[in-house]
Length: 202
Image (tube, one colour):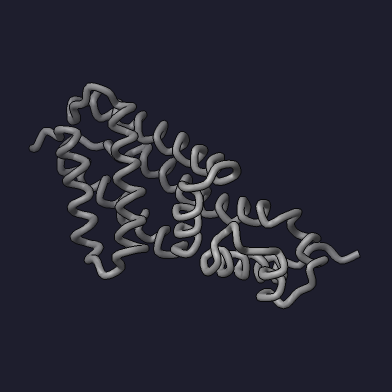
């Protein structure tokens, strides 16, 4: 018996992303997805149990990429022996975030448009994303404070501010106002974060 076909699964995922983006999650039906993918409804259920499951699969793939970047990058985001080195690390992190968002714009739009205003599955996925990244950022803010480069009364609250700045800014400038100069945006984001954390200049 033949196993799952990666090509069919990719077609279903691509069709689901398109339909969720065009119609919204609530209004999209499995029949819409299979029609666009050019497969039968029975084939869909060989790969996914429901539209909720394929949505979770799509979002988890995007989250895994961003999480990998945050784990690799935020481990060293406030590393360095000078304010110049720290700023360079922050800029590099923002650059890589831009790349991931640009490569996954449709999925990012679905997650942040649908996920914030709905409960259930959306709330679960969004809160998981939030807690993972805020913990990672908080740890690195604490590291910067310990080294004497940064100042904040509460690293946990600062981490929430930083995450919100990244998330809302990327959503707005990459998905709503798409003609923004990304280099200018990157520099302003870095300055806003580091000045907000009272980076001590060289």
